[in-house]
Length: 463
Image (cartoon, rainbow, N blue to C red; front, side, top):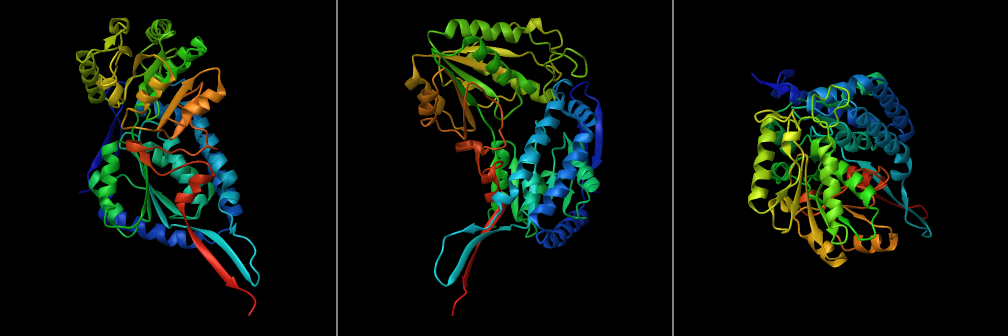
């Protein structure tokens, strides 16, 4: 028996979805079907791929309200916010479809008498996408759509928390008329994921998840010369300069810390504030956080839902307790959140005042509605503290001076640098991380480079 997965909704702790895990025979059949489909698909012109994948996006968006509610029931995000993921999916998918012809075009290396020379982008073969639950469509679409546009086949393994998301991808591609076997999904356990990565049937792995999960992927692929795209954790910083628009900084950064109950790899967790603004920023951030309405995410007016599971809430509480013992001062009274209860996934948000960058809240990823704030003297100290981290996914500065923002950004070790915003992906820009936040790149024209290999054509046309 292959076993089953059970998706427990954080809303009330009941089983929402139950699915059978794929058997060994089903895994082998999926790999064979993907290989066969890809051999034909790579011959399909890019313009035809664009038409089919655009139809798939249309089919997906047409089911937007249903898909949004499923997101809420699987992970607990407030129902008023889940439609934003459908919109984000569409934005990213359509952009990557649009830029594919240019990104995949032959590269002309220049004229040479008697020769025709160019570099062509060849698909890799079968791309294995291992997707997380926290933004189940936004993270997966980053790899799935460009992989298919580049001429690859895709096998998707989605989180056991969000199995319906894999099925909705498949339904949209089937509705659009993609060739059989070109896109498939499998519900898998960790051991089968590792075996697939180690097998000759997979040519590239796109993984989004924890740092430890990324290390497990690397170990599974250690004996193979295949590419890995690893989007891992974050403990993302922001710096509020003395010239910042204070109200905008408070509103933006609190949202960047609390959206999706803080369960975002690029959510804001540590904020460095210039000493001139520190007190009003701290007071404003705590006051705004205290106004959040924590409750059943299916109910109107709720803007903060439960975290993904009760065990995750318990771990976040332990992290907050460690931070407090290390000197962090909590500023928000959890008693103001009636829905927050020990033993459940409902967790009160928190803002900490911190005076030591060694505090666990400044160093360890906390996947919950928690943010820490620290006072700094100026730009140099802020840069030093932002870089004092094993992570490097995104970072932000709030300032009125664009030149200064760019200059500071050049000094910060991060994949994306923001000015006056945070916690957002622009599909025209490369999505990448440094240090323990991973390696590789998705989105933008650059994102196509890891999903293809260069093949040089050196044609002597005059003899």
